[in-house]
Length: 246
Image (cartoon, rainbow, N blue to C red; front, side):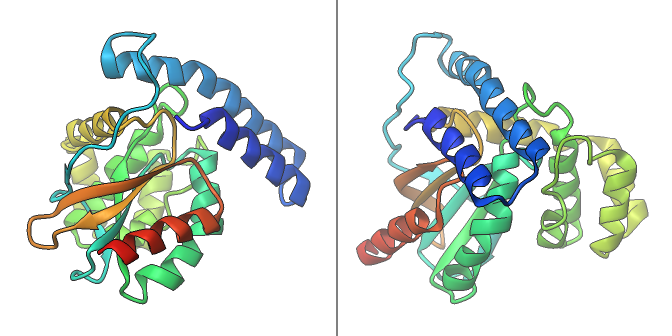
């Protein structure tokens, strides 16, 4: 990956320099970077069965995005795809600091669609899958985005009680939600999404791709990879390039 180490250390440095986080938060991010050193090797091994396999993978010709939530104009042909972990501190930082600008400038204006896909990393956040299951159960009631907006939070904040509270805030039918969670019918789909991310060359979260899509077939042609919680300017550059090509 183009420096998972580079973007991770850059994120920690930026947080500390800006004075926008406490020492404990910065220390937590540093610990995440150290854990990623181990996890990256494990993910590559899962991807290919060879721990010495190349970390960079070429872009595939197309990806099927027919299953999963979208936000934005249905006719938009440029798509930003995010593979993310609800407990990842870098994902949380992207959601709170960069995504609002992407939302305001590109999604709400109808220029692009945004697709969210699951990528919980068990080695770092073994309980994050609960949040991802909860999002799928919310989608059953047409409330995915309402629940999604409440799920990005640190490890240890996705207990069953926490998720029920967020489901209530999202306007869900709690009996139906609880039944869905208990059935555990989405774990396999979440694991499959994780496998797709790894096959695309993702070695950490968040992982993004910008490209074009046929609105009818939902076949996505990736143009650019964006690994990591990068500055808004890099998303802007990739999106504008894709808009120019469509």
